[in-house]
Length: 205
Image (cartoon, rainbow, N blue to C red):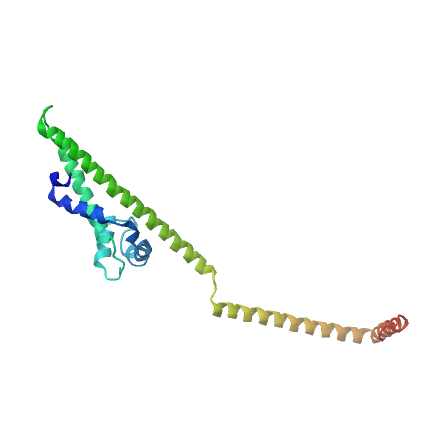
């Protein structure tokens, strides 16, 4: 069918589709470039054509495998749409020899359109998946502390615990002092009773 194409520019499309391998596309790099460089400087509503051209021209985007092929397919999609519209508008009488040829060519254009749309559906799915992975990794990173932060937190906790123990020690000493000042005889008596009970039971005084 390639030889009978009315538009010669579509011949390149056949070569691209024949040799195209989706697995060569670095979707992780695309998602990274989109979020780190493209999104802030452009509309949040992705203009796919502009995005692909930017990826081709921007040296910061190093993983360019398949980007030019996607761009060509996108341009070809517009050409195919115009060609099909032209064939549809051609008014030919029944039985005209060109009528059957146009119908066959229209089906071929439709097949090419569907093939390109299939590639871009996969493109969108993979790009979205990588964006979600990056988002999840970012959330996980915010909850993950660095060793320095952990050490700082540990030091603060230890200092707080030490301060609490010191405060308790001071309060305990103060209470003991108050008890001895208030009733020294009762405290001494309690100690002597404990020693006596220990000696009677065979324990240590």
